[in-house]
Image: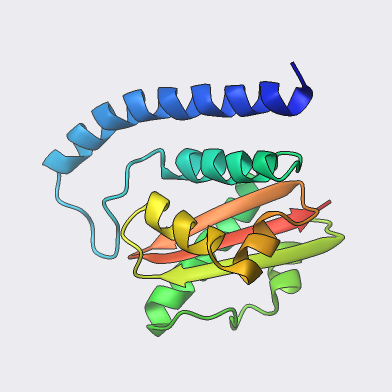
Length: 162
């Protein structure tokens, strides 16, 4: 088996495990009221997004990307900002995309970002991005790390090449 095929199988296994564990966590979380401004996404939504992203990259002969906690935090801050401003945007008072990645501690050689609003699930937002040539180009770009954010259906993907 090729390296990419091994990684694809590993991503699928992780996704399946996340789904099994995530269903139990989601059932527990559904019993408690959601705090203001939070979503009811499964706790494993980032793992689901990563699996779909790397599956799409594999279809196009691209190497998988690795989720980075620093980019997750930066993407989450951007989704939070979009929610608080009430608009989907790449602009942010915290600076340009590159500045936001640098503040997160990423020594990057390239960055890209996808944003979306109102898609109800990971599958829905990923399908929208995959069917958009510009967003798909970012997803298939020469990046090795990625981070994801979501706040009340304001979605952010941040990509970086280190």
